[in-house]
Image (spheres, rainbow, N blue to C red):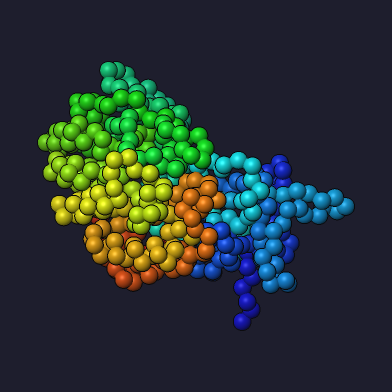
Length: 446
């Protein structure tokens, strides 16, 4: 049989024009180590994804003739030499990257923006871009094609007029229009999952914080909500959503805030009122889970599901990223256990990065964590941060066992564990055949 050709290296010129190399092969990176992607983790670039350049980073490729990796700072074009830069993919939601772009990050002059960086190449045989990734969620509600701002603007104006004294609708209109938050847009489209930001403050100092406080690597993407909404403001907006929206979810802790656990009393009261108003829909709580007693109180108030954010289930990695203020890693683990013991559908918002997430020590710790907590789902969310900065702070240099292989090992040990990317309605917490829900074959609506 003819051996399958490896995808070609992609590179860009100083103007951002992208080319494929005539003979050098695509590589990826796990931690700081260049590796060749395996065929099982090379998939066509998903629709609604984007390609972008990584300035001042010479790409690393595999030279089959030499049998080694090479760093390519320039390419020849006729008689002249052209300086080049690496290319990365930013994938559509629902896909977990398995390798970082292969390039010499030491050459870059600035911290990279808070995006997730994915290895990408050109497949000559299929005539398409390919990425090192795997699909972990088949819910297509969140694809960009579903969010047409031409339809959004009149809906925003109408709802602002409907609730003229509600500060929360003003905040969410800004999130939808200025920050292009899909969850906020859902509120105005009256469908699917809508956010409930509540907290101006946080008790973590994440390296890659996307809201008010500056991250250590670069400016944050947007500003945090500046007030605490009242239970009345929350219910006024969210009860109609639960009553009217298809597949309705309302979620605390959705991006433009600190951590909602800091406003647990307000949230508990609002949730009790929502549950008194309707049995329809799903109420979800996203948090760092830093205060177990408040988690238990919120469970008792009527939450249906909880999602706890973690970049790692190892205390050292966790503390290096979250930098907790006044709580311990053990508190987070206790909160996960508490939510599960209270009968809630319990998820980890697992902020993943190749080389850290699939390190041998993390895989071993993850298996123990699942056994201890009984968590139902791992949402495999690509951590948006400068990869070199993150690897340095985590202190990792050696490649991991492989992100795809890590998923295989976890699923083998715990067939009941679910992978995903998005929160779910109550009706889909445990869909038929969920034990065999990954790898995902073909396309479908989740």
